[in-house]
Length: 276
Image: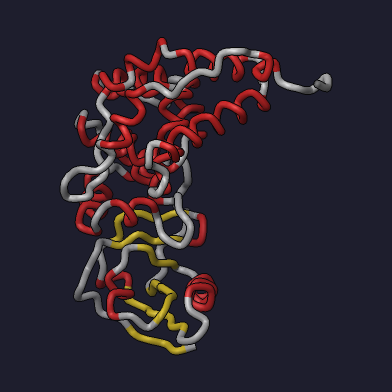
């Protein structure tokens, strides 16, 4: 074993993935296939499990090789138990086992309706968390009836995450997404990414494929070139760009990145169609 080898490999006892993890995975979605919130009490038994202790020890020692080995243990156990088909399942298991105490601390703060941004440790935890955890934060904010600033922070963070589609619209219906933006404060929505300082453009654009539902969507841009980019990226055969008058829409949020304007979901939105 070379000098950079992990001390974890020397351990004779391989920590097992606790049964509580599989209970969480088994109840990840409800009977309507809606993502569910993992309640605070489900994290408590994991605080004393050996795998969590070893993960935290490896993290404290900055032993990345040991952490990688333990992640492989988790992934293998999840696959053997028949999970892992959903993209969230492995990420959820790793996130829960790695930092159950952070989920508990965050939920305690939300229950007390205290400002999250004042806690550096929780801020770092929120910032580095994966997609499943980000959606859990949104669900927790709903569950604890968080103030509009806190809700907005979690909503915008989840909204800006995803490839090709926000994890918000991939897991919640459009009506729910619109309602969450409506319930959020602009301060909260722009806590991690600022809004443009200039006045909003009179026309907004959305690029994609020729599809009746394209005009219904929530993510638009003030930059036509950006819409053209997405249109050609998402459909090379029949790319189109839609345009709509800002005055005819309810603008829920604006973000600097991609000059994005988030509009309320609208099946009757008036649009102009441009074929590229």
